[in-house]
Length: 347
Ligand SMILES: Cc1ncc(COP(=O)(O)O)c(C=O)c1O
Image (tube, rainbow, N blue to C red; front, side, top):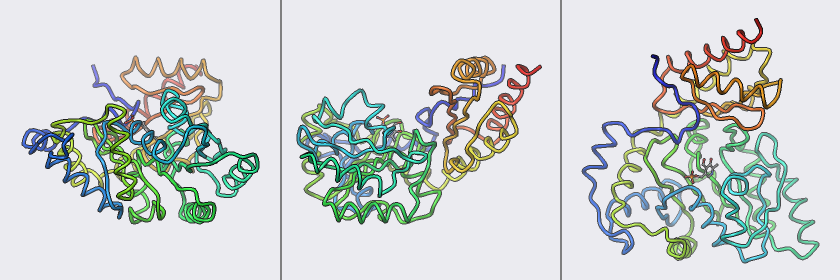
């Protein structure tokens, strides 16, 4: 039996030997009292990495993002967010329940919002008495297919944020992929007065944890909300050490994941049953739209699973995500299997 190739998500990434050693050898303390040296080291390293004043280590990307929105908002506020943004669509209604906020949805192009559309949405909401507390930029965009905010769009968004006096929160669950793909300076992806949440548990391969970074005042308030949500952890330096290891060892290699993702896409472009938006394949996520619709997509997903190729279905699309435990051979086998399963149905 061939080994299982799991392309469902980069959250399936597993720690390697080096990371396991770093976890075992971590110096730890009570992080709830800010006395865990490894957590402090990770927080300081991440704040410096993004050119921000402070950072806090949190259990998950969901908690990091929702804390950011809570710090910015009062109940009843609107949060401007792309219509398929993770904070809105995939976090169990947290925006409403945790912070009493509503979404001011903006249609994106492959998940990327245009500053003009955000301006229109915000001004018309304001004309009717709404307070817009925050603009969320998801970079890279998960639902959009791992797409990256282009530099000129980012600059436009940062200008708009300054002009409207509305802070930006960057949902940077996969900001590392954007950085690896573009080679840009980390600090250049976050505007003045903004904040960023970034996951260590996805492409970077740590078992858990996310960072939320911003100004000293923002992070102090974030720590209060962390307490309120029960997100304060204790000897969690073990996990922070994994995060530090990931930052040292697994950042540059993300480009390999991107190249493999692209190769899968290119190998499948000839399949008439699939619609592949090659321009959207910018990092480690690939969506295959099954032209015959949702039932055919589910049928393909099930038949792939029988061949040991696991993928995630979203409506009529099948999502494939590459990450550090998958090599060239795995990705070739995945693409060949999909192509041959499609051929079988044709015959
Ligand atoms: C864009 C984005 N934001 C936030 C999250 C939430 O991260 P977590 O699963 O650690 O809660 C995810 C998870 O996939 C994501 O893709």
